[in-house]
Structure formats: structure tokens, C-alpha cells
Image 1 (cartoon, rainbow, N blue to C red):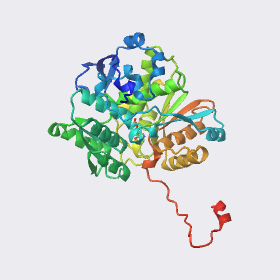
Image 2 (cartoon, rainbow, N blue to C red; image 1 turned 120 degrees about the vertical axis):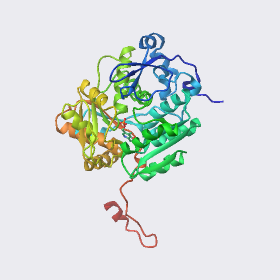
Image 3 (tube, rainbow, N blue to C red; image 1 turned 90 degrees about the vertical axis):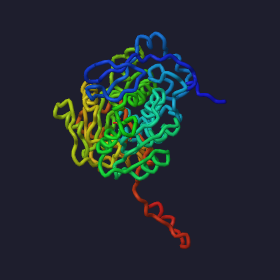
Image 4 (cartoon, protein in one colour; image 1 turned 60 degrees about the vertical axis):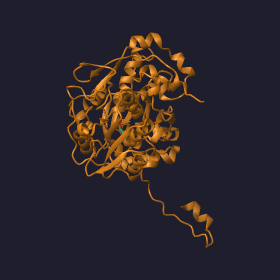
Length: 416
Ligand SMILES: *Cc1c(COP(=O)(O)O)cnc(C)c1O
């Protein structure tokens, strides 16, 4: 029988405790936790000296290309609790023709659309569900704009757990259908993701479900952290100059920032950090507003609207962690409008054959805007994130048709 050594081999674990991201208060590992007593996200802490002395970069050579190759920096204790659908390493894909047009040295895209369920939500949810299994949870619930719900549904079904998923009414139909097909009890709610979140929060006692909302449980961020581990390894244990990240709840941005710190602590990375750029849509830009006003928190954004549904998050429990990482990195937060997102999507597809989802396209639009505004240089090595497959979103219609019963004017085809 085939057994992926990343999943099957016993490997040492190094989790020491959990820590409140606001107060620093410690919480025991190996127990079920939601938010801290202060109502803030909990972060997983490791014995990094132990990792440093007992784990070597060389060991990675023999490990298959999936996020489980980094198990020494992940929370799951027992291999048998790993719930996996093949979380492959995602490629860094250059946009050389576009870079040439722009006059830029290098534009790289980390293409997360290749992960199970078609988005990087798989990274977070494979970890959250594996930890839930390890800690004895059998029923999970979450609010979602689509991709997280699909990943939760898939991994819960895989683990033999129940899942309850609540989506804003106007979530793309394909997402809602996917979630239901993957086995979750699925509802559309006449509100936004924070309204769905309230339903989960208020029902959790009565329904005995575990609240898997973004950053309200500690382990999704550990899964998302692997983006940082992975890209550093792919760049030869180095980081790019600038990372553009489409920011909703911000798990990925916070997670990567944590990953870089952990890699430095174990001696695999130097002190260089990328400038972290949080990208939002002008129709929902709470983090950008807070960044520009010098605030530590980002209040609820009213009437949130954008085609990039994955980043339509009007309020984020980890707002202060996103803003802190962005500021510490010397980066910034920037908003782009839907028109520039759609144009960027078309541009990447036509120039370099890479179809980006609207959130990924937002990072390209933000890159162009940042260049034009002189906030970054053409010589910067930049990394954009395409967080999900574009194939889950409505695409522009095609009306061109041929009548096979009539003579075909072939020369006219070239003019189309
Ligand atoms: C969830 C999601 C995002 C935002 O990710 P966060 O880490 O929660 O900020 C961006 N793009 C897509 C496609 C998503 O599904």
C-alpha cells in the first residue's frame, strides 16, 4: 500500500503552548481553545531551540512536496490524526511578458488555485480539522464567503465529522453548491460574512459545534503559515522584496509573518523580511483605512461590495495583527477598484496565460498601482498571491457563434 511518508512517519512535535496575541497570556497546548479570555486570537508557540537542534534543512530533500513536509513546525502530534487530501506544494509562476511590458525585473505569482478544493483555504482547514480530530471535536461550523466553507466541508467529510456552513446570500453559486456537495449542512444568509459569523457564535452552545471562524481557532493560521515556509524554501531560503497579499481576515499575511520569524529563529532564514502589502478592494477596505489613519484596529466597513468575494470581509478579528505585520515589515495597505481587478485578470491571462481569480488579480492591480505611485521599485522582486482558482467565478460571456450549415468566412475569423 502507498503511504506518503509526510503523513505516515512518526515525527517529533515541538508545540509548547498557545499565547494570546494581545496580552501574551499562556494557554496549555493539547486542549481545545477558541479565542483567548481577552477575546483575541491565540497563536501556537513552539520550542524553536528544540526545532533548531533536532531538525535540519537536509531532511527536506527526501520528503514529498506537500505542506506536511514541515511537520516539525506544525501542531498535529499524532500522524494518524492528519486529515489530508493531498496539499501539494504550489508553484511560483513568473509573468515574464507582463514584467517586460512594465519594465519590471521579476513578477512571481504563487498559484494557490492548485490546492484541494481550489483555494489556499485548504492549507488552513486541513490543519484545523486535523487538530479538531486530535482534540476530539466531531462537529464544526463556520461563516464563509465560499472557499473556506468548501475546504471545511471537504476535510470534515474526509475525517468523518459533521460540518455546518453559513454563506452570504450572494456568495457565488458554484461555491455554495460545492460546499453542499462536499457534505456540509449549508445555508445562505441574507447578510454578510460577519452576520453569518454571529449566527455561528450565538448557536455554538446549543448546537455543540466548534466555531471554525477565521482566527477564532488557533490552527488555521498554522496551516496558512506554510505559504511562508514554502516560498522561502522555493527561493533558496530567501524572501522576495515585496509580497502582495489579498487581505480578508488576514490569516495568510499574519501566518507568513509568523513563519518568517520562526524560520529565522531556527536559523534557516536571515533577518531580511519582505515588505508585506495588504491588498483590499475599494468597496471593502477597512484595513487600508486603518493603516492610512495610523489606527491599530479597523472598525466595521459598511455596505461592503466587490467582485473579489474572498476579500469581502468588513471586519477582521485579527485586524491589529495584520496592521502590525504590515507596519513592522515597512509595507503598506492599498485598495484597488473592481474595474482595475477585472482589467488585471484579463492582462495576466492574455500576456502570460495565467488565469487569476479576482482576489489574485487584485494583487496584480495593486502592484501596478504601487509602481505608478512610486511606493515600490521596478527592480523589486515581487510575489503576488493567486489564492484560488479563477474557474469558480463567473467569467465574461462569449457570444461568437458559427452556423455549420452556412459557408464559413475563414478570413473573418482572424479579425474577431
Ligand atoms: C479567503 C480568501 C482570501 C483572503 O484570505 P485571508 O487570509 O483570510 O485574508 C483571498 N482570496 C481568496 C480566493 C480567498 O478564498
